Amino acid sequence: MNWKPDWGLRGRMALTMFLLFALYIVFAGVLFAYFQSLAVMAGFMGVFLFAQFFFSDKIALYSMGASVVDEDDGPQARKLHAMVGRLSQQADLPKPKVAIADTRVPNAFATGRSQKSSAVCVTTGLMDTLDDDELEGVIAHELAHVKNRDVMVMTIASFLSSIAFLIVRWGWFFGGDDNRQNAPVIVAIIASLVVWIISYLLIRALSRYREYAADRGAAVITGRPSALASALLKISGRMDNVPKRDMRDSSEMNAFFIIPIKSDFIGRLFSTHPSTENRVERLRDMEREMETV
Amino acid sequence: MGLFDSFRAVLGISAESDATTKADPEDLFGMSTAYLTMEADLRFDSADEAALCFSSVDSTDFADTVDAVEDILTAGSEETGTEFSRHTDGHGYNWVVLADDDPEDLVTSVHFAADEFIERGYGSRLLAALFGFERDGDRAYWIYSFRRGAYYPFAPQGTSSRNQSLEFKLESVLDGELEIEDDESYWYPLWPSTRNGHPWE
View: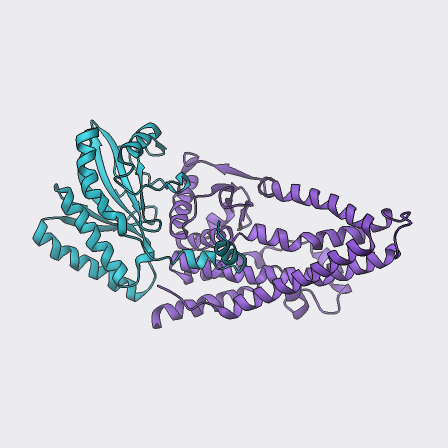
């Protein structure tokens, strides 16, 4: 079974990455040409960010309160291991570690800088909410992230953006008394701010495109686009029913926005994931293609 | 990881394209002589059963394909006496299980079934072919990965641990005769759900 490749998605993804790359080249050039001391500082920050990347899998698992489980750790662990094993076989991927986080929120994520050090984590809430086919769809989506090396791609994509942000934040404290400098530090801070804002939007767009790509991957791995679609609908329904933020907080925040943050153009521009309707619509296209071609 | 792989990962299409890689059945036939070596050198007898394991596709065309595979095996069983059954286990694996006391017939039947999937464009859904062996109550399997075109040994002990020294022995003795997967991270276990059961039971 082969689906038509989604060239539109690939094109948009490539264009986003190209723009991001061009922006970074200019930014790095400006830093090195006019602000050597800031560039040195950026180098140090780079080391710090690299370390963060190196421990990203442990940090992610720890912050979710997840623990890695073996086959023997109960029936849920056994079921997950079997499922992850089978789906990785189909995806032609070494079987990743399996972790469970004990929380009611239905969620799943994948970590790891390389395919061999990766882990797939699901919450107990997810396992309670979804049936086996749907759970398979979600796990396949996470395996597709591993396969597409999304942790690596997104880390590299946001690397200089993080540095730009740090310069905006801390630039005042550095390089102020360097007399070899031929431009005031305020210029560097403004340039960094511009770079940070533009790259932030581009990174968010890239993240959404990679979600679509992982959805396609999941559909192909499971051979069942409908499984992921119904899982997404179930999870998003559940998520909407459980308010995450204190009611007073959100109403106060919304008062400052001209357009309320939910479900509008600006909101979509800033979000890391595409809307559920759009994702389900694309999966539906794949389902249709499967029966008609 | 080659340059082409990195490129596909950057474009976010690795998952999609690797999950649809064509099956590679080239080296499946090595098992015919491996049966002899297993018996002569290691005194492992055939368990008289083999199995083909695949992931399904939720489409009518795929259901037709599975029916066609069953037809082929039914026709084959009249000729060779190979019995077969088809089921889905508790872990969601789909199995075609074959039973015959002539190992040669087992290899041929697995090949016929696999070939039908490939012919109809579902080669990428074939996960593995398993060939069972026994010696004094020890179970061992040679598993052929259609995704990677290579065999690996699997010796389960109980339901969740593997007898690594036996697997090492099998790998050492059969190396050269069978195309063996050299990256051990791809030696996926297929645990039996009961002690001394087959993975497909």
